Image (cartoon, rainbow, N blue to C red; front, side, top):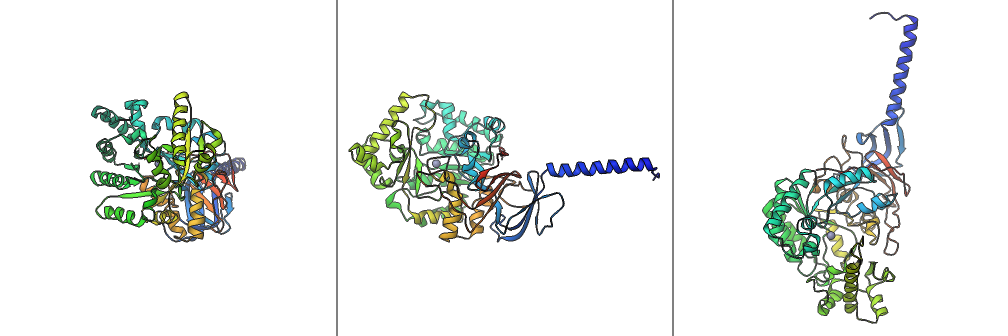
Length: 512
Ligand SMILES: [Zn+2]
């Protein structure tokens, strides 16, 4: 090597110095962060280990017993738990995250990925992709292709209250196949809703076969959660059996009073199917009341039949504990129970149910361009024992089924499981609960690179205090923030700290 003369030496030192400086700057901009002094629950179900997690850019680069490096940003986890960011297996949060500046609904409960396109309703993958760029949000998004959306596109929005013809089914198959090739997770159906209620089993099966051929999955709000539940379960089990692809029951529940406390029998039936090779799983939210349109309270879609309304108020929901959470025709009804509204109207509860459905239908007729839901009810219709059993089932994962308002599940589902069901009721250990919010969810829904704390995986992380974590959202104050969720990272960026959004919006569209 040629000897350097003094001037060259000085220049060389200067260059070296500049390089080092540049490197430091780079390190800073690639955001190496060390989260030390934490209990790592990695999402696989394995026991917690004490250590640290190092993240760089959008990835986890090291974990275990790590020493602090110079120039990295260090966060003291103060002995709290770090887990993979929660994956909401069934979410309706997208609109809320796009609307509000903060994105608190998901972040406050530790959710870093929402899985949308549920209940048969989805957006085309191309428009989702454009939206994620145009309107950045705090969470990652993955989507199913919705059966009802396919029906509306092919048959026409106002023409779906019937079976599809074979040529219509063939058109749906082509669109479905295209969407799956663009990275959608699989096919979703919402067979209890009118847009799909009139579809035949064969129509659904033909589409399911397309999803199976593309090596994807099927997820379903099944045809009935109450009066014809047995038949609805049989349909999804058959789809799993014939197509051999994984099938998942959305927000599993027993919503008919005479079926209450029967969860074990349902789970035995599902396990029998599993033993026969059907890859059936379920997602569940931790509340005894659901949130939907009043119309689902008429399983035979006979909205003026007093006997049906009578069955609804006695068997399908508790009118004295069920609240109207949206009602465009008469906003003063919002926040009141159906019983209270019946008193006000001097009608029976059954008659009030009929009246509210009719008024909402008239409103829809008169306001064809009305955006958003016209009516919704948070209906008390499940038993606590069943909800616990479904959460405990080894093949269930946690979902919110929520959005940014109405039902408190939109803000509190995951923290409620951690606070109430794990810490207070002790129905399972923390590692199992986390697994059901992360690693197991990713594997059931076909999401790679996330859901586990492992070197090379995406840095979606949540730091929380297991001693204090709890939901606070309730009906009437459904946007109350959870406590105990200390920090949340999405793709390596801190999006939430001490009940406040940081303003960063690093969510990406996840493709299969
Ligand atoms: Zn649903």
